[in-house]
Length: 163
Image (cartoon, rainbow, N blue to C red):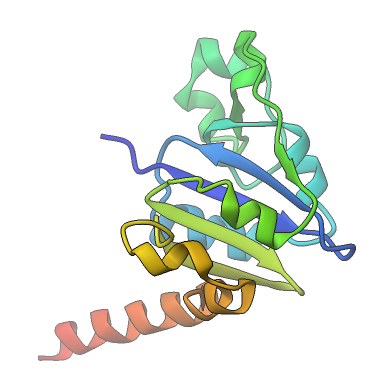
């Protein structure tokens, strides 16, 4: 079963680029890959791939990945739907408010903003009626830094191991 994720980049000018990723969206996989491998120097390259079947450590994809699938995954490449002929470009938004209003609903959501990766489990914008009136600041308050969450997870795992 897939753990879907949404990977988004808030550019310095405030615009947002965002892609869907079908497999392994959970923090221990996509969260760790994003934290360790992606930042403002290569996020546009990742976004240019469009929607992904899975995220790799390198912002590259090839048609051969669909033939050899998991062999290419071992080379740390992404697997983009465009490479099997689908048209799935990155979604683009003029600002964070427009992005949240789009109500993209993935289980795991990542946003690179101001040099840091943030995470929220989604969707947090709708079942609550009052979410329709939430401000961008209120949405941001529901996000946590990926590095902080992964550190907490490691500490919890260590606590279990020592007890």
